[in-house]
Image 1 (cartoon, helix red, strand yellow):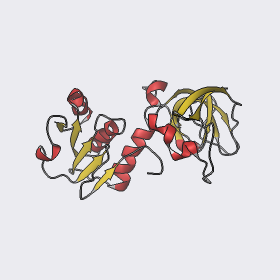
Image 2 (tube, helix red, strand yellow):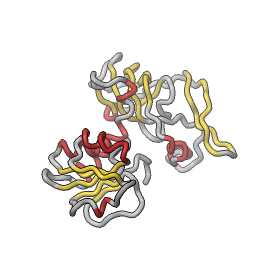
Image 3 (cartoon, rainbow, N blue to C red):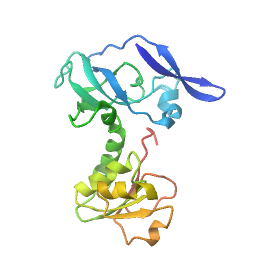
Image 4 (tube, rainbow, N blue to C red):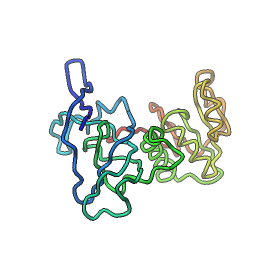
Length: 232
C-alpha cells in the first residue's frame, strides 16, 4: 500500500512517500480502508512518533491517528461492524496511522460515520471532539447554568467545547480573533471576546469553568487545559 512515513534528518522530521505491506487485522482488530485522515502538524515530534512503548527509538512511523473510511476486514471476535461499513475514529498512538491506504484499529475506537458528514469532515472530528468531551464532561463535569469560558474557541478543540457546553446548558463565553467571532457565536457562545482587542478578564464576570485551548499560565479554580498531544 502507499503511505507516508516520518523520516529524521539534520533539518528535523519530514514525511517521505513509501510502499508498505498492507496490514492485516489481528484478533480483536478492524482493518480500515482510509478515505480521509486528520493532520496534526506537531505530531511529527510527539514521543509516540519517535519512540516505541518500551522507550526504544521508533523509525518510519506512519502518522495520522484520526480518520474516516470503510471497514475492509475484521479480526476474530469482532462484532458490531461489517465489511463495507463507513466509520470514523482513532487508532493507537504507537500503531501506524492513517496517512496510508489502510490502517488497523480497535472496535471501541470507531463509530459509524454520520451520513451528514463527508469523509473529509468526519476525519477532523475524533481528537478535537474527544478532547472537549473529556475536559468538560469527565474532568470538570460541567453543570447546567454554569458559566464556562472557552479560550481558542475557534480552534479544532474549541469549536467542540463551545457546542458541548451549550448543549449541556452552560452559559458559554468564548475568546477568538475578530474574524472568528461570528463563527463562535453561531456555535453557541452567549458572549464573544476578541482577544486581540481586549483582555478577557476585563470583559467578563466570574466564571465557573475555564477550558483553555491555548496553554500557558493557568487560572485558579475549576479548569482544564486541552491538548491533543498524548503524554502531556
